[in-house]
Length: 65
Image (cartoon, rainbow, N blue to C red; front, top):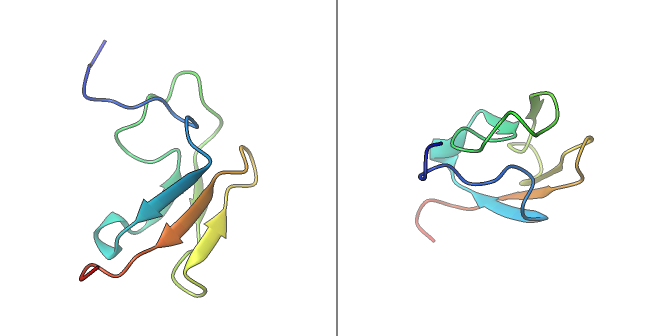
């Protein structure tokens, strides 16, 4: 088991950066075996997106912040 991976769907709010796009849930770097199917989220238009499977909220942050 890779100790660098984070549990999928462990949080309900994630802050993402432009470097993280295209945005998917679960995100790369999360354990996938116990998660839902991969879904891409359009966060670029409004700066926010919610996963239809797990309800996690994603907020796009400016890379300068």
